[in-house]
Amino acid sequence: MLKAHNLVKIYAASGVPVHAVRGLDLEIEAGEFVAIMGPSGSGKSTLIHMLGGLDPRTSGEIWLDGKRVDTLSESGWALLRRKKVGFVFQGFNLVANMTVADNVELPALLAGTSPREARERREQLLDKLSLSDRAEASPGQLSGGEQQRVALARALANRPALLLADEPTGNLDSRNTRDVLRLLGEVHRGGQTIVMVTHDARVAALADRVVSLLDGEIVDDGRIPRRKIAGAGEVIDLR
Amino acid sequence: MRLHLLALLAKEPAHGYELKQALEQTFGAAYPSPNIGQIYVTLARLEKDGLVRAVDVEQSNRPNKKVYYLTATGREALTTWVEEPTEGPRVRDEFYMKLVLAPLTGIADRMALISRQRRHYLGLMRELNEVMERSESTVARLLVEGAMLHLQADLDWLERCQEELC
Image (cartoon, rainbow over all chains, first blue to last red; front, side):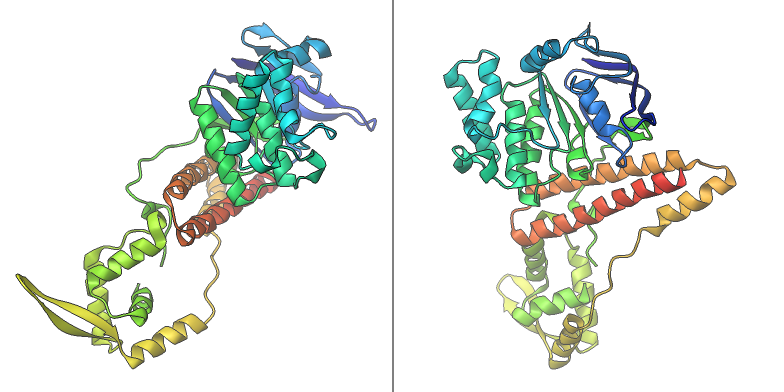
């Protein structure tokens, strides 16, 4: 589904080149849920931005569904994202002068979904994220946690084959995180591929596989062990 | 478990099985379901120490059952327990000892130890997510949330160890 080969990113903004990602190889199967973890500055955000075509790579290749995409123009990427990639930004990137409802419906409408279908999908998503009563609000009237959930709803509006997310629960309290966990679980069971940068172990624990980065390199890549537990007593010990 | 049982008995006298049910209902799916034998053993010890007393209640067609109630000494012990500060959680130092000492012996490297431990913690977190889904009461959910926050801190600490030691 998604493949990165010898991916490199060097930032040279302040004159001194900084290696954010150093020759990284990654292969993600269709339907897989992958959590990307690592300390800040390890290259996680850079990686996910490159995978979504939001930050150009310095060298290396990115393949999506058997097609090379790192060579696409900005408009080529925009078209691709509209068709099959949903992206949740750390900074939400909602359109300030549109309502929550319109923000969520927009990607579906741009992709050619009928207005009725786009509305139904929006209603479902906002309902699952406990945001139905905020549909007519503008992003500026929302709390950080609300904006974050709207950004997730927007990314999912098109039922993208690939969901890329950068810290999608960073601003949520535990009740809202539960809504997000349930929705991501559904999306995963529905067969969509998810690649997510996260510090939040509750979200990472939903993944099939964890990729750990350190200094722009993968230092671990493997599955989360699954035990069969008899009861919660094996997890929580009350004495 | 001694003091947990005393606390329940302070509310009302009860027999062993009722205490087991009360614990399960209060803490929900998150509670390591207490073994009934363990409850009876604990009650017998509490009785021997004078913290509870038992009266036999006759039942038709069945052996008598013992209903336990709190004594004045029991109430005092309970008050002391409630009023004294509780020990904080301790750092999971067993893993840290491995992390620091094992590489010195050449048995394992730190990066591998940290990676394995991270996956293990995430496996535990997955189980807590599942327990959370099954937890209905606020009391039960808060217990799971507490365990999740501790686990998150362990993972954050692991990351710090990786940054500084690897």
